[in-house]
Length: 118
Image (cartoon, rainbow, N blue to C red):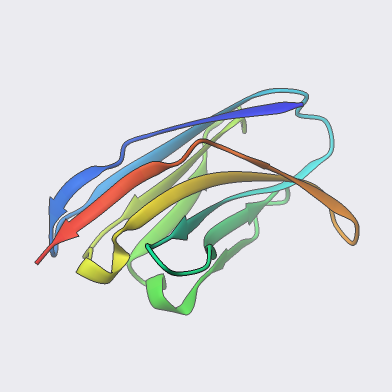
């Protein structure tokens, strides 16, 4: 089992910045990637950014150039630096950890609300 705890959400004006943190604990063995997803009201959960155990990153087109995903030195923490925030970034942001590749299992945090006012 893997436990994920997010922090750092909140209310910010458009153009502002927020930094989300996710601390992972438990069985970290064979985790292939960690990342951030978001879900806005009435919409499906979508990938925002992910980072593999090898350090490769992947971003949604809508956040490229504005968001940066990174890991802490101990690699059990992942961060999402969000700059130039837009109202359409408003959503609940979920931390994700994935074990496996072709066949995989996802672990999820409880979510943290990010609200961007115009």
